Image (tube, rainbow, N blue to C red; front, side):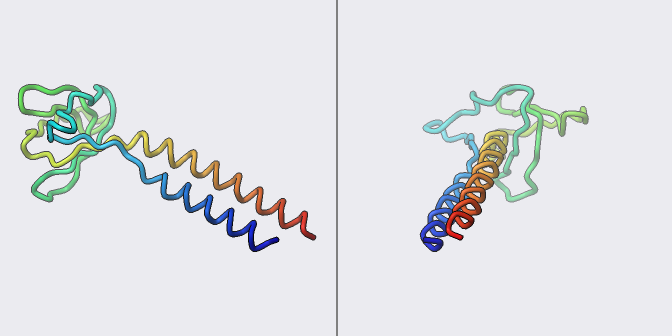
Length: 121
């Protein structure tokens, strides 16, 4: 009985871990998105086409062919990134919510395993 409970709990835990890798990605591909879904005042991770360092910006707006933002919530340095240089923009806030839910779910699975192992004794 212990093996089946451990097997089920490990399967559930692996499902939680796999689901925690979710992010929303916006790209210039017009079939997918044209950056119109970006929300002002939210932090995004911008991946560059040329392979240079990714940037975390607080998005402000789009002006013509540029994405405008600041380097952080407290830093007021304005960042202007041409859309042509952007490979992808990722919204990591949704991933943090899924990670939190996964941790809570893993704690629940651990509680089930502990209670099942005590019931067998």
